[in-house]
Length: 103
Image (tube, rainbow, N blue to C red; front, side, top):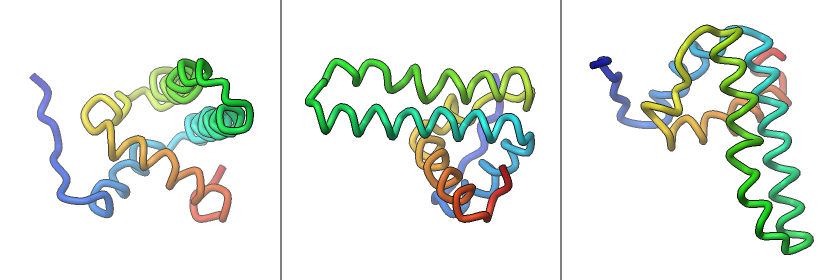
């Protein structure tokens, strides 16, 4: 069984999260997936099209996992740290927009 690293806070987790996203293609794929998630959420709220909720995991995870499996060549943090990983996606997205994390 894999030894799972434990974190006491998101602040402790985020540097680890970034270390798992060193490949620029992986980060860009995350950015695309997170952008789609934001657009789908806006569509749901604007149109009340609640069935689009089903598309959220597909939009978010498919791009990210392609980035991890084919470019980063590591295991997505989602499997061991689902909540921190989801939060990490949005924080990294913001950090990419403001220039803290390179595209």
